Length: 276
Image (tube, rainbow, N blue to C red; front, side, top):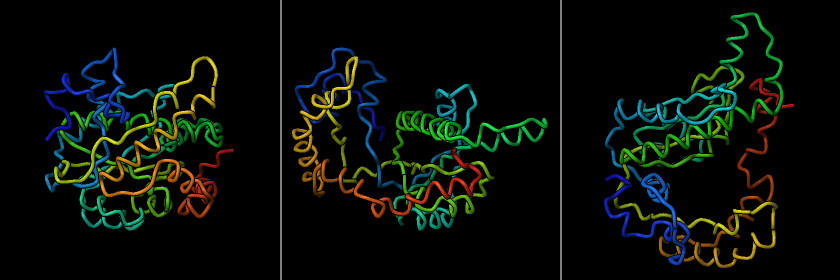
């Protein structure tokens, strides 16, 4: 079933998004209402994603903004069950990677530029700097977010997989990535299983993320206790535990909480992305 419906005009989707029924948008549109319904999907039906759907998703991704039109990203569509199983083993053994009919791996891809430079015998010295690596990561992220909005409009669901960065060298080997490129995240895609115990998760209030003219930390943090209560209530309703603050502090506690990703700088250097 699509993540859109015909009742959007009678439901306060913005209030659901923030876990605050008093929050109402004075300006909205069908696109915004569609985006407000977004949620991560971790349970999928076995129904395949068609080739036509994949092409539409990539067309939407290609329509995202890109720095200087460099389009420094690529995406690898993985459907082979055994390859998905191997990738799942590398990405914290997350079961939904195997269950999703399609697993998209998004790549910061500077190798295309290197191939062009080699073809035309031109220098490409700028790619050794952090700016170029960031450019590829940002381009990939913008393209992937466009893809998510598009696939949800087709009735599909997805979840991002940051655990791709737990073992990026092994991902590169499994996927045959060239040098000057790295897998930055995955996206499990498929038809949502309607029995999954999940819903739209409340986000930080706008007071925490929207600053006017200058950054105001005091104002931004004032409503965090209330948000903790809202997210804790969501978690309890879906059999989860904890509040947002607890998760943030645990996730950022130290190198051990990064699940191997503290090694990324050295890995990028070995992938010919030295990021000076």
